[in-house]
Length: 408
Image (tube, rainbow, N blue to C red; front, side, top):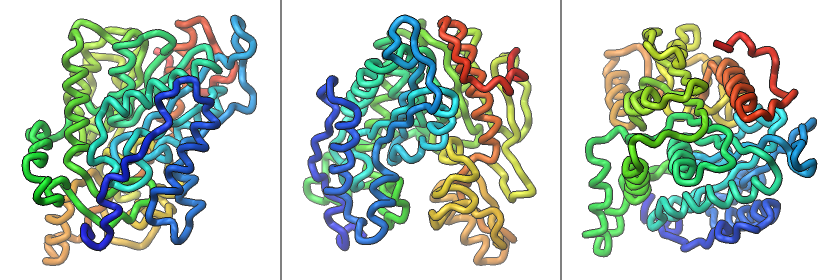
């Protein structure tokens, strides 16, 4: 794979349109779309589908409520920030729900993503942070208050930005935030620089066939190292400083990518009374913190035994990752198969495949790709936004009133 498709594993040195904070968002979308069209190497079939899935998007509410202070601005906006290896597509289901609640929704691309895996060879987390700055600057021209919505690395970028620049942020939605990577050796992922000039393959933690048109499958060491640097930058901020706005956190306790216990500890250290967490866990553990809602992580009727990292933001009806999705490894729960869907990493996958081949287990394991509890999640998210809006005295009549049962 590495030698067969050399362009895929080389850095194309792309310049991203994120440094002009006055750039109109429609122009940002156009420029980003051209980058995707110019640099992807898999557009020989289904080009329009691939390009549109990876391009940043804007979702305008059908019935917006405008600001009293400035009638040219919509009261609420949401900036969606995807995670490492992902693209704006992973945030689309959440974005559509927020649009239905009256928010102006925009997504961005983090530099190094949506083109070829080699784009992550030299990127820095500061470049990703600049993309967040651009998104906020652009959205703030059109809305009164902003909700930052981030998945994994995107959630951590939003947190760092908000701790450094708290103005105009009404709340944060953090799905599987990367407070800590699930590895004891993440700080060593920069070791490859010592030998990669001689052996380019050393720059890669993992190389795979790129079979997901909305996400990289191959992983550059530098990409993981930049997430580590991001987590260290957050740690360096005064530990007594809390996010200045309420936050809504969603976690899978079985997450094998980020450390859920580290996220829980950080959440419990935050004192804001309007903070909420949804935690998918096997035993519906009751925490002393009433702000934490435990939800079941197993659906035996669907052969689901736990929630994976990537499953959280996607609806069961997602056209790519859902139960009828076009992704070859989507969790097709209605198919006649012998799979258990769960949180899974590559070593575990290899181990369980071996057991299955040896007929020592009845089921193969496959990573869960969607959230079967998605409707509850977005209803709880609506209630969180309603509370946060009340606190900021900008209540929107578009917030779904059917979720009042979640009020404490």
